[in-house]
Amino acid sequence: MQRLILLLTLLMTTAGLYADGNQETTERIRYKYGPAYIYRVTLTDKQGTTGSLDHPTRYLSRRSVERRKRQGLPVDSTDLPVSVRYLRMIEKEDVAIIGQSRWQNTVLVRLRDSLQIQQIARLPFVKQTRLVWLSPDSVTPSAVKTKYHQCFEERDSVSSDPYGTTSQQIRSLQGHRLHDLGLHGEAMMIAVLDGGFKNVDKIPAFHRIDIRGYRDFVSPPSPSIFAETDHGTKVLSAMAVNVPYYYIGTAPKASYWLLRSEDQQTEQEVEEDYWTMAAEFADSVGCDLINSSLGYTEYDHPWMNHSLWQLDGQAAFVSRSASMLASKGIILVNSAGNSGMGTWKKIGVPADADHILTVGAVLAEEPHKIAPFCSVGPTQDNRIKPDVVAIGAPARLINGRGVIRDDMGTSFSTPIVCGLTACLWQALRDKSAEQMIELLRECSHNYFHPDNIYGYGMPDFWRAYQIGTYNNLQLP
View: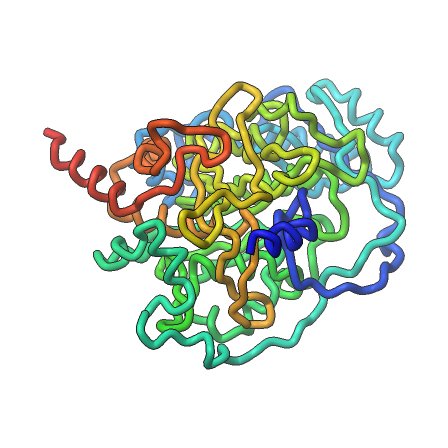
């Protein structure tokens, strides 16, 4: 089994989507949009914003505002929209604005001539410009239709266990005991940031999921996020599918937003901006948790690559965004990465972010040793990473063909943890995002001697529930 894992791991990617098997291969085609550039424009301030700290529901949903109030978190200047006046002045330079970040006060502009950025850089409210994307000469078509099965194979049924094929990955974290209490993620909202959700709109097993909506933040957007990679399909299945005796996810009664931020056709720094835009959207609609099985270390252009010294939770654009989420009342659950057997070996970004749960992967067989491909810590500022680990070598998942299969990667240990975290938080709604993160660390098997391989270890969600509810009873 160990040899099989090692061989399969060599086939996994180490940037962007952390694991993405069973994808179709097609011939490359000429990039149809012609030469273009995308720059990140950082602004000096927000003078002229249409938002007000006194009226946050004008730019945040009521659910988002209530989430902050419940945790005692204020709305601050980072929440205010980017200045509309500045946006209009940038548009006068004959460029296309394709996105913006209110948290980092940046704008993404797409232009045909790189010389145009010089004029934008001279505007008095522009602090900095950075090239984050160059159009490629050719790409591989990513939105490819795939046939799918209408039902599971009979051999996948486990008549003796309602969890079916997912029993081990849930029971290993004592997640079934939360479910026994009626905690299935009801009233919790989870955003799934990924590269695509192939056939989620067609496979019957996904029809019972409460999907609140979906958005594509990649430019140009895909014709359909449901024809892109099935990586997000697998991730979503680990949390949301509910087909008794075949497959049950960790939070089957939560609601979900499906957000595409990963561009399968290129690997460039702009994806950190797309990720940030998706995370801000998740905040604005009121999501409680974000599952991100994405990470970045190397890009198509070497000068965009990250270095080990940048793994401090702040140096990378995407990590700065991720480190802000807990202050907005959101728990980010992010995969550690699959670079453990490569030259990089360490976690990527935003797995290095502060105040998040970074998840590594262990073998399915007891005693659940670390998967050899799992990226390790610490961060550059010497924080323990990963935070926790769960089964991911292999995990049972549903792919874009509607078939239950094994797949490996920290991409898939992550949603197992994310879904159960939603169930636990459902019972402990008085706790803040940071308190929940610390509780799960405390209730992991390696808490008293954490290291940078297992982190704090495998979390025991039943113990976390007991401690969390006991502490609540002790409050005056």
